[in-house]
Amino acid sequence: MASKTTDLSFNDKVHRLVKQIPKGKVVTYGQIAIAIARQTRLGGHLQTGLGARAVGNALHSNTDSNVPCHRVVDRNGRIALSHAFGGWKEQKRRLLTEGVRFRDNMHVDLEQCKFTLGFAVKCREFSFDPALKK
Image 1 (tube, rainbow, N blue to C red):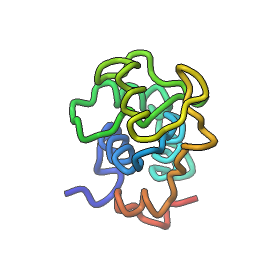
Image 2: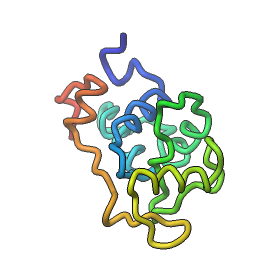
Image 3: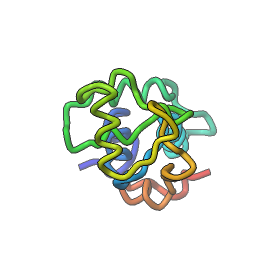
Image 4: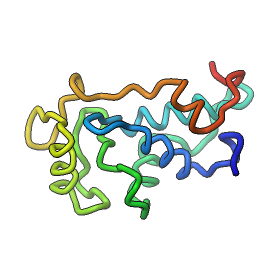
């Protein structure tokens, strides 16, 4: 069993964070990338390969239906055009079912439903060493 964040693959880190997003809330691809980068900081340099696109790729390749990928949107609140589990219509349907409010047909209301990934949540899930937090 992984005891440190460095023992997990990037995709595993993404999936574990996404599993923590509560129903009715969303996070952005960038939020996830930043959360992982902050917790995998080594010697003051962030590991390469992190970013919103890498998070999107990790979610798009996910095959575990227990990972609520539909709760991740872009920085403007836009839902994914090619959501892995049935396209944007399915993503929107799932979000609406959970009570997420939309500003228009393709954008969630981030002011109402954006979830903040706090250090305590990440620390519990990844068993992060708190000394690594900056």
